Amino acid sequence: MTENGHDRVQAPGTRVVHGGLPAPADGEPILPGPVFGSLFHLAGDIDATNASSSYHRLGNPTWTRYEEALAELEGGDVVLFSSGMAAVTAVLTTFLKTGDVLVAPADGYHGLRGLAGGLLARMGIEVRLVPSTDADVLAAVSGAALVWIETPTNPGLGQLDVARIAEAAHAAGALLAVDSTLATPLRLRPLEHGADLVVVSASKHLTGHSDLVLGYVAAPAAAGGAEGAAGRAAELVTTRLLGGAIAGPMEAWLAHRSLPTLEVRLERQEATAATLVAALRERDDVSDVRYPGFGSVLVFTLADAAAARGFLARCRLVAEATSFGGVHSTAERRGRWPADAVAPGFVRFSVGIEATEDVVLDVLAALDAA
Image 1 (cartoon, rainbow, N blue to C red):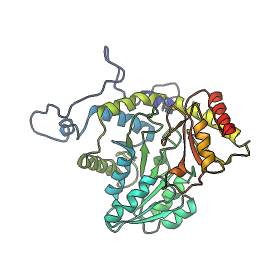
Image 2 (cartoon, helix red, strand yellow):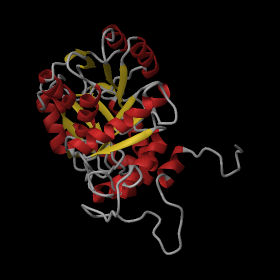
Image 3 (spheres, rainbow, N blue to C red):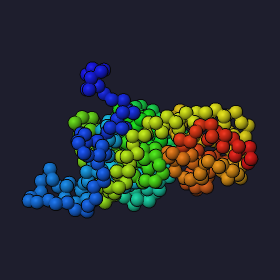
């Protein structure tokens, strides 16, 4: 490949713009509109080439284009689901069976822990919940069938060594699944570090406007990867087909339409986050400021629950909301959710794309007023 030729590997910021698009055609839109239809004309006998074009639950060209775009970013095959939790559930129910052991984060996303204590327990699956540190995860992998990690973790923002854990998991005969929602494929591609499965809530940074709920799973491409990898995406497609956790065409189209701005959104969010983190670390009334150096999310701790509530009530630009990754700045006191074991004054803050100086001034003014 040549640096100035058309075969050069494109930068991520280019792939988010052009991924999944058809070849240009006169009179046709760059991104074709959503394809609506619960059924499609299908004449004659059914074979492997036309089955997915017969009924919406089997396939839709609008999903396919978005999956192709995400596959370019993740470096593997991608299966789209109707939500991040649908993607999580699909992985757990597809790759675990009765008697298996799952290693999962005790301090990670509460939805996974909810499944561990409910559905997985009823399936007869042992769940080892461990703190999100390299040492704790490595100590727990023996005998596991699936190791699940988050990096960065939510809400603590801890970071793990994916390659090191992947090597240990594989040596123990386990698969490694990585929840990479906070990082996005622009900041971390876990498949390149040995992960077998990558799970992302596309409701966050990927769609970016706090108006869609989607999720996906990436696995090594069928043409290569670890032994057995070729079938993992196909197995997940079967799980989606039978479970019915399909995305609507309008949601998939809107998600694809939003993808081209991912890099520019992240760049503004990260610049603002870095400035805000520096300002917060100068204050005596703010402690334990954490930021992984990328993404929109940072966390900090105020004196108590009352201080956190007072701060949030006095923000003018920052909405009090429970998700993250959108163009609007949001924040919340995570202690109001009993599933998260955090300090009463712990605040998770998601930086939007407002002007940096306005976000920082709003936060500092709210802290002063509180």
